[in-house]
Length: 288
Ligand code: C2E
Ligand code: MG
Ligand code: MG
Ligand code: MG
Image (cartoon, rainbow, N blue to C red; front, side, top):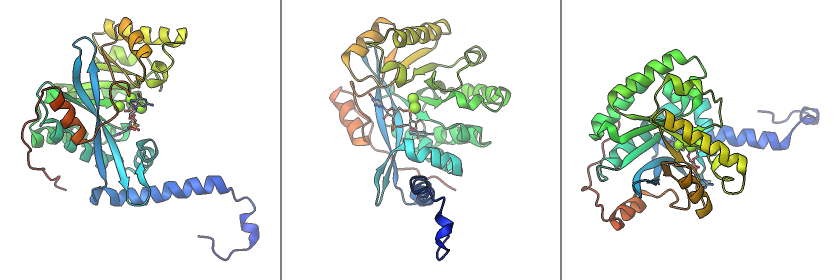
């Protein structure tokens, strides 16, 4: 740390960059504590099935209630967690927590959990999924993991092997943020994903922008040809919904239907729909 150095030291000082870098460093330090101190929670955003006209499940979204900064967005802390490797332990916590929560919901409700590429490529990942399923007692068919195309970045061979192992467990696999990353249609040929999630950046302009609408239509048709479902992300208004319906999209997720909800919010929503949760189960601690 530069304390009493001469003024010249700061000649190339870039205040904006430094502040951002320091905040990042501090977030990394704080993340290490956060897991042990129980500062993370999961919120759950409903996914609405357009064909069945009902909620078919929820996506678990991590929230960090920081003691002094307040709620920190995953857009900010997930990349720091990935760089520091902490995402492996955080993701393990999220899988256990999400499966345990979903086990209390009606049996036809699925749970989708985001899995970072770093976490996915970690050698213990398949075992962590097995443990989350066995400790929670959740039917594997109710668990969907969301991965992005970035899992294919470092060679697709091992990735495909792992995807097939996970599939053999009975869980579902969704391709998240489709079209934003290193999209290669060959991934679709090489593995039968259960679902493609259409990124919000294509969904947002769909009603007024013919080219965005054409892209969404192409993704929906492509998914259909491979017998994959589609979920449109970030649906905020009725015009978008109407366009997605007419294009044959299977399900939607977005503020139009519901924001991500707390556990209590989910319980209330399911009750309002006449679907009761099963009685509370005792929390299962993660052994380390
Ligand atoms: P994602 O997986 O694509 O999740 C969808 C994001 O869109 C969520 O942001 C959600 O709150 C937001 N969203 C949903 N509907 C709308 C809408 O109508 N309008 C707008 N503007 N946004 C909407 P969130 O919760 O901030 O999460 C951001 C990203 O952080 C996620 O994107 C995911 O990549 C990552 N993330 C969140 N939780 C986890 C986790 O447990 N593990 C990992 N590895 N990543 C996570
Ligand atoms: Mg997701
Ligand atoms: Mg997404
Ligand atoms: Mg995303």
